[in-house]
Amino acid sequence: MFRRSFATSIFALSLALTSAHISAQQMAVDAEGHAWWQHAVFYELYPRSFADSNNDGIGDLNGITSRLDYLKDLGVDAIWITPCFPSPQVDFGYDVSDYQNIDPMYGNLQDFDRLVAEGRKRGIHIVLDFVINHTSDQHKWFLDSKSSRTSAHRDWYIWRDGKGPDLPPNNWVSTFGLSAWKFDPLTRQYYYHYFYPEQPDLNWRNPAVEQAMFDVTRFWYKRGVVGFRLDAVDSLFEDPKLTDNPVVPGTDNFGRPNMDEKYNQKLPEVHDVLRGLRKVADEYDAVLIGETYTSTIGELKQYYGERSSELQMPMDMMFATVDKLSAPDFRQQISAINSAGGWPVLLIGNHDMARSYNRYGDGVHNDAIAKLMAALYLTLRGTPILYYGEEIGMENNDPKSKEDVRDPIGKLGWPLEKGRDGERTPMQWNVSANAGFSMARPWLPVPPSAETHNVESELRDPGSVLNFYKRLLFLRHHEESLLDGEYIPLNENSPGVLCYLRRYKNEAVLVVLNMSGSLQKFDVDLAPYGLAGANRSTLLTDMTGELQTGGKEMSIEPFAVYIAKLTK
Ligand code: GLC
Ligand code: CA
Image 1 (spheres, rainbow, N blue to C red):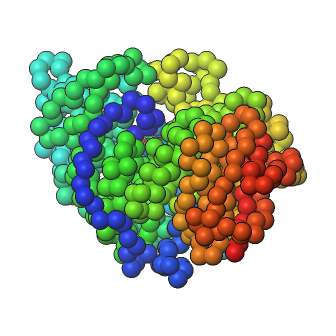
Image 2 (cartoon, rainbow, N blue to C red; image 1 turned 180 degrees about the vertical axis):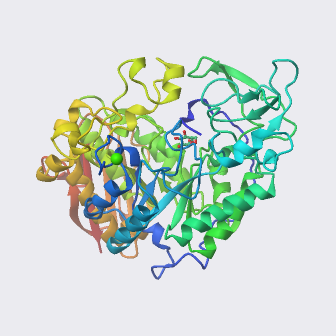
Image 3 (cartoon, rainbow, N blue to C red; image 1 turned 120 degrees about the horizontal axis):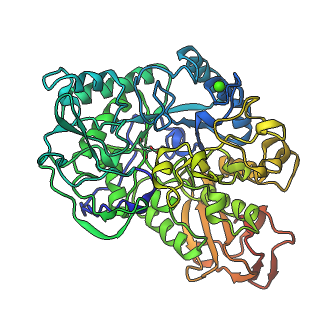
């Protein structure tokens, strides 16, 4: 799935689920039985754009290895690398033509092994991206599948007759524009693709597919990978009767009528596959992260599975897509996820959505707002996933004209849909040519703001976004309350200030976030939480003055962050 906007599945089953709990295999690291990934900070990294070691304009694995010290210093415990397997790169790696190798443009298996080993030395785990819904049309399975109606792999994909001459089997559409069916003249049938035509969907109803894909995970676990981010899990199954999807009001970014994708998204069979993948993961103490675009907390709950038998880390995309700086909106979303019973997984950006710097920024106070957003999701209960460059306030850099677009959906949907190039530009390391990413012209252009927003310059500036992230991540790793404390919302009616406690035993961390552009007064009553009269010491703030305290009332500057420790 990409960009939530026109996915309208309302397949909301309200199953009564027992709350998720931690299974024995999950390598407990503390007395409360938390697993390592519950205390870890994850970092999503787009390998094409992180660091280019051989100066061909495209990032690579050796580039990543060369930057592990930076990640360690930042406070990262695990990196999720978006697909780096052999691929024709139609969808920049999300079209995999061989699951058990590395694309030569990124290096080779030896480079990968070295990355794992160097990561291990620094306590940085490697998570790979597993594209399970589809393969590339150049994968040997598909090449065989399309070769004849009786080929060994025919039933590994979804082939159907058309409804009539030039008529696809039904009305399903690809989320990347056009129909979801492509006619193949050789065997005179259509194959199904929820994404690009070059990404035929696998047939997960075929046990051979399941077996082959499960074995892929074993291959990488044995090489030292600690888990996977599972791509597009919502799309694994389709209604075998191919029932047409209902058309609903409105149009999507490609100008097509919206559809309720109830017959090809989030079918219940998805959960059988996730349970299977989890069983294999448990053999290796591995963690599964899911790209789970849910529309309700009930749906998200299902992805944890009964007794935590599915994904340990389904992403809360509802939190990630709160698209305005609004205390009430975030408050509501945070309460919802905390009621879900599982361990929250929080992020504010990824390679499919415009950078958070621009989505939340007002164009004037963007750095302050970037810090505010960081303070939000890095002090909440759960595991955060940073998106590379977010920590330096990288901005979105959309293509300026259709000719410049690299992402095919941008070419098809221009100008309404500009594609995802803007959020995938090279990491900004310093002020040298191409922001220090490469000596060659990078595959996507670096924005002018790289002059000020880059790692080297920001490390020198105590007030930078980067140094703010570093301090936050330090607190996150060292304050018990931030690691394990319960979430207690305060002042729940405040329209501008988001305020909460993370309470752990006899102490707590107080977080006050002014999401408005004006000075806000507020007071907090800590008595109900057994913290009346607690000592308060500031842990982190970006306010120019100290927090003004007159009696119980305090005031906090526009877009400011105030984090304090309370001890009894
Ligand atoms: C996921 C990925 C996205 C990709 C799509 C198809 O949504 O995050 O980048 O295009 O799946 O694999
Ligand atoms: Ca390179």
